[in-house]
Image (cartoon, rainbow, N blue to C red; front, side, top):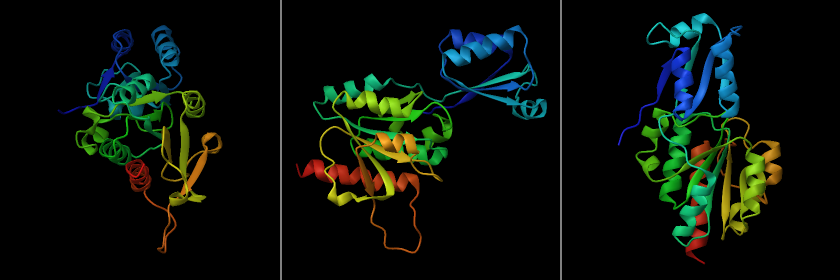
Length: 247
């Protein structure tokens, strides 16, 4: 099944897309434009926690496929987002302790797609991503997931740290990948667990890391000091799988 992200151009078209419940990832608005329809779009964007970027007319002209953008272009996700509760329900239906991936500002669509693929193969019940400063479910993500988006729900949240707090109330524990942590083989990763992976450059943010119960480091013997985000996610995921299989 193929998924294709697409853009919506024009003020009325973007407003109607919001009213129709389209999963809009971000809005590009002409910098300095303040008229009524644009104000309406910005209100809708705020209501739905959509990222708004103010850009030049030249940038909009480059993005436009019709040449009639009217100062606004919306990027619609390639795939529908789930709710966090949908992910927890998926675990309940399988009578399994929840196993989630939480991705802190992953910006590379190939990394996100690869992590969703790994999450599916490792038996994770879903993936949670932030609404801002991160890639959404683009067509590249869908292709890189190799079909996993058909089976693995992805939820988008406004505040990752608060989401972790809320999930702790559901009995979950959280482990984040970080070079300064305890070797992952020394940690108990069984039970209801959320695996937190940081972005490609800065790793897991401080506020999110502080909410985690455990910090896991992956043993490395080479001459460089970091792993690709999707590779780190795969290694840590399969340590969770190993521990679950061994009881």
